[in-house]
Length: 561
Image (cartoon, rainbow, N blue to C red; front, side):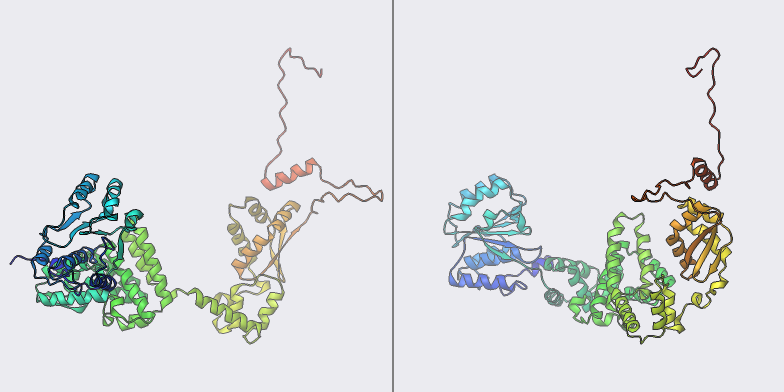
């Protein structure tokens, strides 16, 4: 007997065999039993979910010699010929290869002739959405008022491409994808019928990879059974198809959770060296992390996890919480999107694995918000250690460093830098000045020049006194006092107010005009142009150049002579 693929051998022959489409089978059964048979049906849904098989079952139910009956006998000449595809009264047409209006005109001519030996002449048009607009228009009148012995059954995977005028003339049935439990049950039956032993984990993997399509599940089952020598296991699937496998993926995730970057990257190199593609590893990591997220959320249904619960290490499932798994899953999705445009997809994967090793250091926003709320509450009611000191700092309207909060709330956890912070009169102002010049940088050339030529700095209480070379420098420092105070806080860890001082008086601005009391509104103390040029010379370290006199040619006469 010739070999028959599982998808053909296990094709349903009755409504009882039609698994996973209970609504469709129940409705068709009821319509046949009551004699309410429509002249046109439209079956839509994803691939491999039973649309064409249901059309053939419906055709057998209508043309069975014992019917029309919802339970076709399957042994009469009509049922046998329909099963073999040789019935002259059940015509199957591929819509993808018969798209023209001429093919539809041929159908219009054929429907005028009654069936040869059956009750109904049935046209099954698969992938009907491939017909052209002209073909659909030619078909409209025929399916609206066909002869009483004609039944049309249309099947499509892309319902949105079928014109509304066709949909309105058909009874529409929407087919759904198979659930994982149904696929798993049918795979067990198929393996038992052919005498193939299969691990539960291997069947779970096949069912998950089928993504709801029963035909895809049977096709993958045949492929795996071909190289498994009568025993399908996860190890054989992993080795032959280049998969990571649950055991190795669990080892990688355990190393990432432990923060062992070196071992995790070395294991990743070993897995990729065994023939696993970068894209396959990324996809398997996403699937495994999703399962861990479900377990952390309390989900234990194996059909939803895609693997047996015992296949996940206990220390891994108990060692990480849902918020961090959500973060890992989001990063992996971003990795999968970025690999398409990356210089080297493997490097992207290695970077993602390295980042996963620091997942324990990630602080979820909810935890951070709760911690801040608890700190505010403790400070507000005065129950926190050092709450009074923090309140005094806040009342001073000065920037308070984060280390001050930590030291005040919990002196035992104060950072080393805070514990060794120098006193106000012990600040190394020479180092501070050099660090400030570097911090200001090239972005503020004038400010950097002004503080560079300033005198010796000193701290007076909470003030940082900067002796400036002139009034212009003092004005420039005062204008950016906020920036300098921020830099001083970052360097010293202490809030200091900037106070520039100059040996010469600052240039006086023009006073406001006087009122009607007759006072003079002129300012007799404004600097003249010469003083302003002198300030520019000091700032930019330049010198004044006399304007060259024009050269007079011999015999040239000027009007001023």
